[in-house]
Structures are given as structure tokens and as C-alpha cells.
Image 1 (spheres, one colour):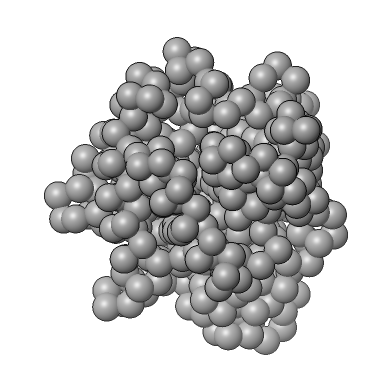
Image 2 (cartoon, rainbow, N blue to C red; image 1 turned 180 degrees about the horizontal axis):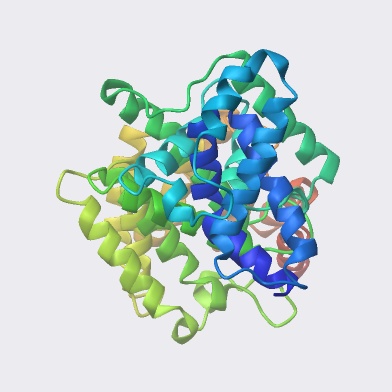
Length: 408
């Protein structure tokens, strides 16, 4: 087996393995470390001797590493005896993981990785590591941070979970929905970073976005009765459907009005619409409303044919259930398309006056576009130049500078 084969097996089985080890050991950090050691051993041994049951091999090896670690902890002899009495190394992974509990195990792993005691950065890093199966190097590349920074976040996260005594279990039913919001927000952050990179020289990081979609699909399979889980999955699928048309061959951004809609991924659109249908019967929440906006775009043949009035209404609803200055800014864009730039500029100027997005490049970007449409070109150019100075993404910055230069 090649390194790619090892990585593929790990990506598929990592959540199951770490979840089962955590349940057996009662130690989240130990389970994750043991699983990583098993992968490192697989990278060395599998190219020479491929196992018949790769997942079972990883599980058995990780279990041995956990036993070795517990053996070294003199105070934990009782726990070691309990583990040692389990199945022999080499057993199939299905013998080591209770098939009746696996769904709960993976779901519990998500809740532990996204626990409120952790910082937002640690939640993202731990979720990508233990649920997504990404290495520290992959996470560092995805978020353009040094590998030691990612490793430190993961280490601190595991220590925080241990110090807080976070149990490896599903939260009680009364708490689960409240905690579910934290899990959804982590997946949302990961997807947004892949959909529009906050910094660097690329607009898209598809691998990051598709990892978020995989996490959302897993969560939807584990929580099929939660509408917002399906709403988030729908939003991710419908947004990712436009990826093939969002950049040119050189990676430069292509604006919505200039995209070749024939290049959109219609399979992703169908999956997104199906997920949105599952979210709709009990009323749409914040993610479902954003998905409905994305669905309106996806169903239109062109920008001109888009139902902008519907999008305005959806943004107004979103502003009521999840108010934020970004929602207001997006509503302004929709209002400009539905009713003209003058009304939209009033909304944006209110955001400027209240300074609700200080330092953001988004407000001057939108304001510059609206001023351009109103023929106030010197003001528009100043706004676009300000947006370019603030924008951390090189590809977006180049677009803003070209627009500003065109106004001269």
C-alpha cells in the first residue's frame, strides 16, 4: 500500500477509531495520540506488508499503543486491566467497535471536539484532526498558519478538555440542541475559509470546503431530525456548486454576473436542494435561510433573471433570527439589485455611521460598487482603493484595484 492508501483509510476511519478508543480509555487526548501513532506505524509497515483489514489493523495497533501508555501510568493499573481483557490485537475493527453505538460515538466525538470550554481556533483544529482525520500539516496549509501553531492549538485543546473533565458522551437531550449550534458553527467556519479564503494568494481552498461538506454530511446522517443540520449541508452544497465557475485558469476571481453557469456543479445543486427540502418542514433557521438564498441564485438562469425581491425578503428574515452587520450588508446588495443603488446606499451608510464592521474591506467594497452605479466615480474610486488596502486576500485585492483603476 502507498502513502496515499494509508491517508485514504485514515480519512475514512479516523473518527470511528478515535471515538472507540476514547470510549474504551476514557481519555480523549490519549485516544487521539494513540491513533496518530498507529498511522505513523502504518506509513512505515504497509508499503512492505499490506494488511487484509486496514481499518482493523489501525484499530488494533492504536489499542496497543493506548495500552502501552496506560501501562506507564502507574496510577491507572485498573484501567489497563480493563483494556487488556478486551479483544486480542488483530481483531476486526467491527469487533472492537460496538456497531450499535458507533453513531453515538462519532457524534460524541464531534461534541467533545467542539466543546464550549475550547477556544474557537482549538475547536476548528481539533475537529479537523480527530473527526476529519487531517494532519497538522494539512490544517496549517488550509488556514495559512505555521504547523507549530496548529500543534499548539491541538495540544492546548486536549489539555483543556482533560482539565475540565469533559466526559466522552453525548450531552443530555436538553443540552444537545444548544450545544449543536457550536458544532454547526465550527463546520460553517471551516467551509467559509474554503469558500473564500481570508488571506493568501488563492480565492478558493476547495479541499477545506469539501472537508466541511463531508463533516456536514456525517452530522446530517447522525442527526437526521435536526433541520438546521440539513440547512447547513444545503448551504455548503449550493455554495460549492458554483466553485468551478468562480475562478479563471489563473485563479483570478470571476464575479457572479460574469460566471458561466453551465460550469456550475448541478449534482451539488440537486443535493443541496434535497437537503433544503429536509430542513424546510419545521421552518428555516439561520443556515436554512442562507441556503434558501443560495438556492434562489442556483435556480436562476442569469443575474437579471434572479428573483431579487425574494432574496431581499430572505435577508430580512435572516436579519430577524440572526442579526449581524454582514447580513445587513448582503441585504443592501440585494436591495440594490431589486430596487436600485440609492436605497441600498442608505443601508450601507447606516453601517458606516454605526461602525459595526470596523476595518473590514467589505463595507467600502459594497459602497464603492453602489457609488459607481450612481455615477459618483471619484468617491467610488476612493472607496475601492480603501477596500483594497484592507483586503487580506491577494486575489480579491487585485480585482478591487482593477475596478478602482478603471474609474480613473
